[in-house]
Image 1 (cartoon, rainbow, N blue to C red):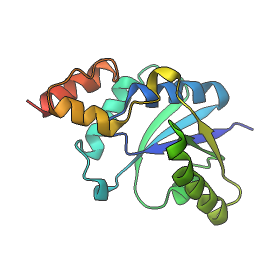
Image 2 (image 1 turned 90 degrees about the vertical axis):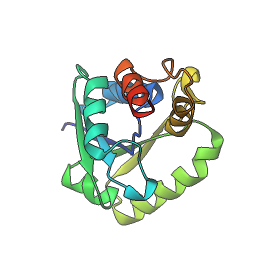
Image 3 (image 1 turned 180 degrees about the vertical axis):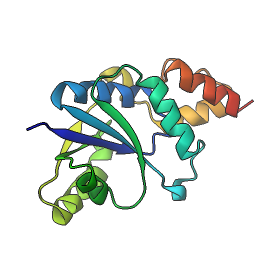
Length: 159
């Protein structure tokens, strides 16, 4: 039986930390769905279509990766995709409490879907999409933290 995992997030924008987690997940699962959340409450910098397009550029050539947008409950999306696993990234201990709550709630909603936590390499533990956007907004160099396509999109957005 093939194993499908979902890696959900707003990915506004997708950082090198995100992509590293995705590539590592590809080694563990047959299929990894990068599930990009619509989530207008977060007031994303990039539209859902733009985030899907950027993810496609960043992950071009990644075997077993699908990039899909979604709205609504993640657990419903996981069922629709027949995913057995939800991947969540943990950068720091401060992420754990919130992520633990989400995992517990998802388990209550559907006990057949497991949550797996992955940590990024030490190079990316301090990188967040919010910080990347803030640095880019003020003209700082974010090239060490994002793929060149994302870097170009950020530069264009903040010109």
